[in-house]
Amino acid sequence: MIADSTLKQRVLDELRWDTKVNDAHIGVTASDGSVTLSGHVTSFPEKFAAGEAAKRVRGVLAVADEIDVNLPTDYRRDDSNIAERIAHVLEWNVSIPDNTVKAKVQGGFVTLSGEVEWQHQRDHVEQQVRHVAGIKGVSNRIALKAHLTQADVKKKIEDALRRSSEKEAEGIRISVSGDTVTLEGHVKAFYERDLIKRAVWAAPGVRHIIDNIRIS
Image 1 (cartoon, helix red, strand yellow):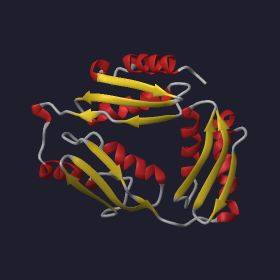
Image 2 (cartoon, helix red, strand yellow):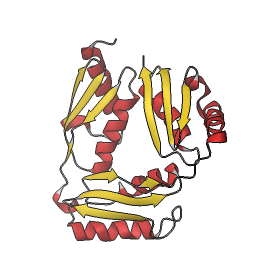
Image 3 (spheres, one colour):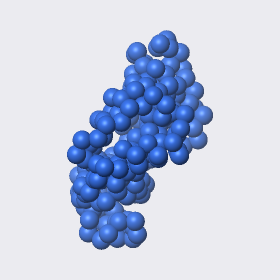
Image 4 (tube, one colour):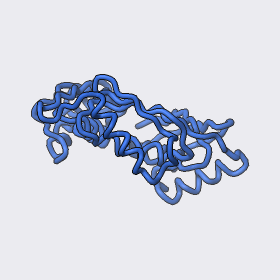
């Protein structure tokens, strides 16, 4: 186990190195592999980038992102303006069928709902909405349609892991029940677990992942 003080410094160094983050007003605490980010930034993409930076640090097992988004006056938008901008994003998004995703805006916080075929579509919508001016946060509640074929889904996942993250997939056990995939085993870093989960989400029909992967 990495000492709390060492892990805290590693996260601070990673935040300072990341050009998408201004670390001047971000605080970090660490306890037994769990890292909490606090303070404030001037945009939601910066808040997101700070969380991703913390996840990249070896030894980080969990991240609690408590950073506030304090928008500069020139970047503040009312909810109706934000909703209009998001509507344009969804309208021009060629990766999803029309009218399958909806957005609700309240106090600058966006909730996405609806249903799509694939996890990459779900991620893509969130990624685009994340950069709409004036938002303070995004809750992605978009569901995935169920069309899982259990006969070959495990093989598809294992093949995907070998293609994209062979080293990280060693020792990972996969089980499938209905539309749910359970992962067990261990990896060495937070980002390795993310690589494995992305490969699983790429399998057709996966709607839920039970992540029992340990980081050690």
